[in-house]
Image 1: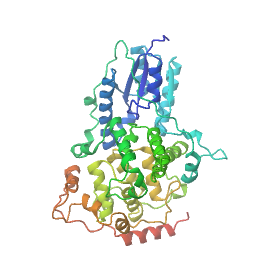
Image 2: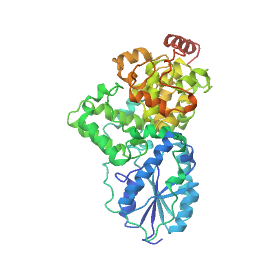
Image 3: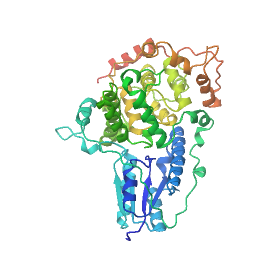
Image 4: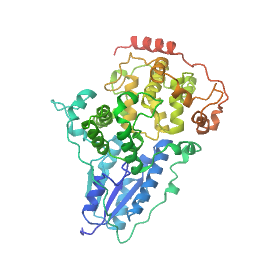
Length: 473
């Protein structure tokens, strides 16, 4: 292998140049660097909104690489085959990438590393999507943590690697391999007309993400303890969109939050705890991959949830027409913005799994299709937490009342009025945007009457508690 042989940097959910250990390591060798994105089965299996958002992110990153005198090479196919072909085309002697932790990616990456090494090619993975590698956080007994609070206590004073700057120069090869085009990939096809509605809400790329973080720390983190639970106000960082695609690293967020905490900001520690909650989800996914597709608490396997996604009350839920304003507002926010406030997510998920007695997998998959901040670990753990079947979950007998929750966290109905148009003489622009985002086949209009509840709050709660009492947990 020549010292001048190129290094392929395989870009996945790490759409940034700053604090990118794989890219930085490649550039530090002085050898030519060829960044590549592969459209494999994992990309094709994404839901409509996350696949569309990935396409936007790749396009933005390609522009960033171009401004740095480099290129982003796009190829489709099985990762092993694509990388082997690029090695032959370019004479590359190494492939670097940032680690992923979901079981499908782990299996793929293991196969890639094995195949490359068999061919005499250096293959190296780097940390960066998490602050703490899952195998490094253990209890005194050498096991992984299954409860969040002890996990938080175990990592809160650990050192987190300082973020590294974007490379000043990305060495280019003498000649570039051919590339497919993002237009041909058409990753936004399934979004249809919803793309035009959601697009203004997107904060695209690492510079926007860093701006978001800076504004949050400067203006919002001090009150974060209170405002993070109020969906009608702009009280959160909104960084989940950028973290999900690695447009900003958790280390960047951690160090900014830590500095704010040391400077006396009251809400900064809560922000750090939220970052560690994300870590906790990934650690659980790594140690117990069943989190993604099975009840984490195995005693829930026989629970009689409805599994019919086409049941009338489930269809009403997916359309944001349950007749429960807080639930409907959350779902409509998601259709218009691609995101949903976390307090609303809890209420929306609780209503489906408890009041409607519907399997959390149905809700999880719907979110997989609709969220631009979709994250495999956080989505799965959030749904299992709400359903009661997951690790460190809300007690199964705790059934959120979406009416009293609205009264507590949306006292003046600002959030509900922002997203629900029916029954209002002059609905807000955001509320009307819901009708532009949804499929025409739903046949819905802002002039329709607001629906009566498919399942009332009291009826749903009684049904849920009855089912729980008849189970041996």
